[in-house]
Image (cartoon, rainbow, N blue to C red):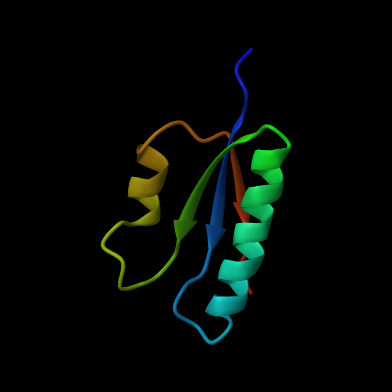
Length: 68
């Protein structure tokens, strides 16, 4: 059985976005250290890559939102 792919959502455009980016990076690092396959996506509204495109970029089994 293959390892689950975790998509960590972080950031955004709101005032707490910098905190979310730090927290999300820590979550992604811990998951990676634990041997998980991790992808990270920043939910900036100005980003041309939508959440839909991030999910379509490859298989995702778990979404881990780290939004403040």
